Length: 532
Image (cartoon, helix red, strand yellow):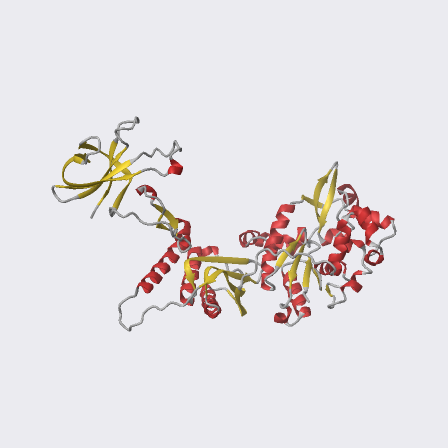
């Protein structure tokens, strides 16, 4: 049976200020400390414009004690407390802060999601025993959130809807619905526990349907015809008759290891040592399944609720702990002061996000000191990984063959991360005639004296130097690709290539662009490359 935990933050918009960035906390710490010493928190509320009325959307505890509550008009609120402080509501900022807090909850479960505007849901199936049971897990979450200055209520049940209702309608701050008891728990609750619109709840109340138990016992067909399918869908999802999709913020990785720290640490050397321990654990998991990682990340959890994420990428499959540790150490070194340990780090997790099958490779059969081709390729991949994580893998490229007989199209740039996935077409064959070691891009124009219409060049002038040709081989005729002939932007014509040698023994690769018998422009000659 699956188990879900719902966390409700009833005063989230007014209390989320405690979860601002560390830089903002440092800027306001002195001012906040002075104000807290002189006086307690004053009544405060967020407002929004609804038609011609300014309405209260959220209040703090002090305003709630004065009788001010959400959905009250600002005029009525000022009648109760004339000096009420107000500020324009910012739901986008509230949602962004809730997203960050939800990511922080990854320390408890790999499956977390938002329940806007003031809730978080966790799939705790198989996770509670890591914290000593569900009650101990609830207490741990409540104590940490209270330390952040947040008011919270938690509830757990077999369904997402029942857990949501337990957190908001439970009599205690921690409501634990035992497995199989969620229907009995939901029956006496009001219809608001089904996450129904207020207008629909009012219409149901007018019919005498005020509790969830009334809907459970009522025939569903008339309710569906009168109120639509959403009413019965919410009811069946809460009771477990219909499954509800749990949409986590991210797909949980296949390989994840975690290392809780006995005492919070603030030194980066301790963080690097912990990453080395996690890298050895990841290596063992990957080698057991014969898989290698292409993308790894480290989640650094601080005691004040801040989450730091480090990502490293590899150009080839990797499963060596030493290489993984080196990449993360360089990542930490490039951050400098941006990696703030705050009041201490108490948990670090490492995950392999992208993995593929990686067969074992034999590096060398002899005990000689000669480096094998496999070792050379491994060293090159290690170097590319370091450069890629420093500069960005999109900036580290190399040439790969491409299916085209046109020289300037026969190679293309490719990022090193996609090199291993490039496959040559089985029908593609390299040209039979030799190609020069050095190609000019673009080809350089030259002046040629040659026999017409198809004779080889006799001499040419290139870069203000005259070259007398003693040997020539050709022509090798290359026509533009048939699928690109109609493209006016290609500008390609039929080419005749010649391999020539001058009196000094230097060899060149020349071509004539165009044919004399065609009605197009007069053919021109170009220098395409040099042979060694």
